[in-house]
Amino acid sequence: MNYPSFFDAIPTIELQDSLSGFLGTFEKGIMEFSYLDVVKSAGHSCPTVAGAYLCTLEGLKALYPDEIAQRGAIKVEFAQNQTEGVAGVIGAVISNITGATTDYGFQGIGGNFDRRDLMFFNQDIDSSVKFSRVDTGATVSVSYNPHSIPARPEMQPLMQKIMQGVATPEEKKRFGELWQERVEAIFANVDEVITLI
Image 1 (cartoon, rainbow, N blue to C red):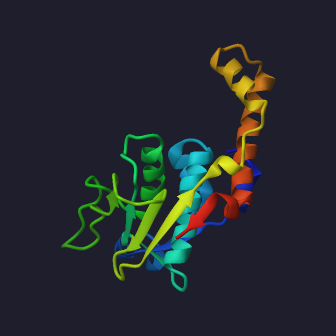
Image 2: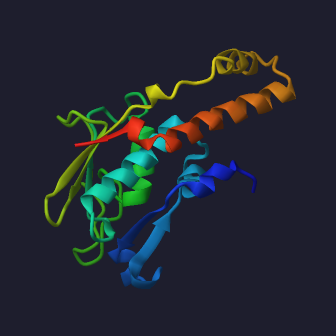
Image 3: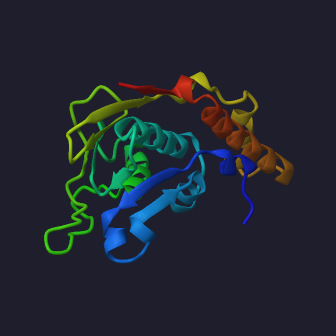
């Protein structure tokens, strides 16, 4: 499987999942998510998927500064409706990492490990996403703004040619390279695109 090499340079997200430990899936329930993992789940790499990953990476570092993040014990809130804009895409990525779901997730075993009612949309928050610890109630709000990393001017005409079915193989390849170049630049400028509250 070939993919852009910068994927491998992006920091991973380490969590401990009590359900995973209980079922003997990973030793002590400790698991690691990479950007490549969420890209495979989403099916593509784009500024939205990158933003969801970065929000989670930076949010969990702030929420668990001295300990490993606890998967399945993190509440996630969004200001937008699930079907509005890219909120659903972002929610899917964050759900994959944190285990949080609305009402469709794992129901638990004997009253433990319930993953439902941990993700909420249409919330009164002033950020892209808000993470809260179920155990302590500590919260962190994360705002993501990729607009400071603009697309290269040649991307738009290339996209139009592809959508019209008139692009050459070389132009299609070039468009993909430029698209991932912007994603790489977003990861290289975390301080510009991510704000923690």
